[in-house]
Length: 546
Image (cartoon, rainbow, N blue to C red; front, side, top):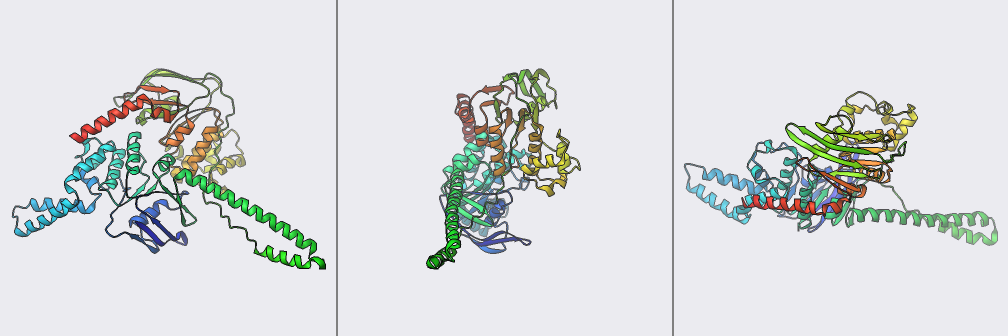
């Protein structure tokens, strides 16, 4: 068990947390949620001991081991992959290294023999002989093949490093596991494997994630950070959301009844307080009025942007025709003879691990890149708005937010433009902010404002949920569901894809295309995905045997 006792954290004059008391018990998985800036990651750092609170203490059951997901992807570059995973259990790794140093001595003394014996005993108690095989199993489960297990961390890609650090956090069956955005940069098989691992994990888990589907799948409880306090709810994210909305509704209804009673009493007092025969009743009702207090309803600090894509023109039957399109990048064929036709009701999710191919395809459709072979043709009634994965060029200038958005608007009126910015949570004073200094989430909201103001009837979105908080993801999700035009998009957010798409396209590693008119969940349950999972499982088992 781990508990926070009277935790207060002040940053300058602002109190991020104020006298927080909460217990996290064994066998439960807690989803830590809250608005952007509420302090979710900060609270995990306090729990893990990486950050000292201004006041209060963190208590852990004596003898229990805490593990957390490291965020520094370069910290372990000098070490081999397998060693990095085993470092998740600091004491076990120290024993291994000390043993190695003793046995490497040329002048091995009696004292060394005694010490080695002590270490061997402790090593056995900690299941040290299974350490390498346990670490390898975790790595294989997350998709790091055996050939990489003895390479240096510095030789891995960014997404591979993320998987190794996640394996490190999971290693050795920790009593308390803290995970900050564990699904970031994971492919679908790795996410599914992690979900099953956490569902079957018997100890305490506290996780921060913007992935609603993931939270719903693994969490038994929800801890909501708001106004510097943490309120604990039983149930997953959806249960918390429905419960919180119901509670607000009940409080409003209760207050409405109290307001009606107050109004009735006030009217009686005003009518009869001057009437001698009614004065006693008026006095008693005045006392009753004084006792009625409206429940303090403090609205959530969460802010939801208003995302509404409205096409200026209705789309015709001819939308997009792609014929035999191919593209090779750096000697690798990422698109191989792709052909399909879009209908005017299609909302297409591009899924799978071949992210470079998807981005390349989107850039070709937007005229930013030429195909090597084949062609494509947009319908004459279509207009496109594009959300690029890499938005560096968009904001490499010194324009203010208002001026930046105005350049994309047919109507140059500043009030009109600021209306779109206001919907995306940029108040009036933010209009003079330079786009160069915006955060990742602010840049995404600017790009979505640009897409809204365009009036396009076709939207292309390459990972739009990156850098967004849960509230903005929900607003974007709802906006796309309502959008009457055509959508081509890719996202790692399961719920986002499932609720938006009615057609799934997967570009395979060899550049070929699978095209299915179906929902995402139905596609994941299809024969194609079953075959791919089987291949993945066989490769994992082969790697474990080796």
